[in-house]
Length: 312
Image 1 (cartoon, helix red, strand yellow):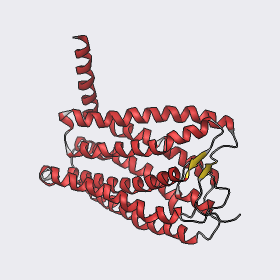
Image 2: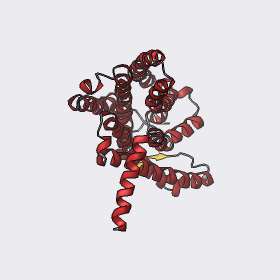
Image 3: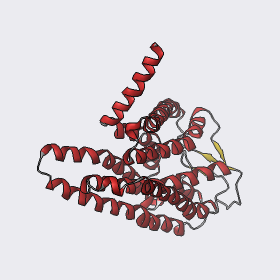
């Protein structure tokens, strides 16, 4: 294939070879997207409206929901359009926007998971000093760091990817514009880009993961030192939701970004991306709130207030 200049747009192949599968996915993705919107919006609403949730933990908890809403809204509407009809195109600017948003939100989520791990460390290991250390100014500084990392994640990888010499057919063998799919579309030498993915992944992703694991090693030592079973159970419950989200996030990014895309199964990569795009943002609010008594209580108070108001 020949090299192109700046393309007018791209064709997202996705699962275009299987129209029946696409129609099934249209229904499934629509349901998951609706649940994602409702679940994450409810989490943000409860944390904002209920005074009992005006604590650092729930202040941090609203930001994964904001990230999930931004992430899914940047790609799922376009995905649904492509699943529904024969038009699989996306403009060059639309593809670039998806890429910038994916990389930026990915970097922000890495940093946010680290911030939340630090918060859990202080809750379990320094409970008497927690209220003094984690004050509102510190919370805002940590969240600012999360969103600054988004800009860093966007600027490092996106420009070099969008400047690749793309093949003239402009057919992206995926349903979203992510770095691995665009590298696979390039006709020139992509070894530098693949090396860049691996280096950034090791430094940025694995660096934050290492710090998270260090935090949890201290948490584990503190939990083992607790004498009562009730105290251990409470400490485990405090950290279990965050650990589950960390596991889901790092499993995906390790599989897709750490290894070069040329060695990654195309079909497996598509389904893995679909799982991450569709399922994970739906699971996150459920993981954080399903076993959370404070969130359940806030929902009952808000629902009860609305119900009483309507009855009156």
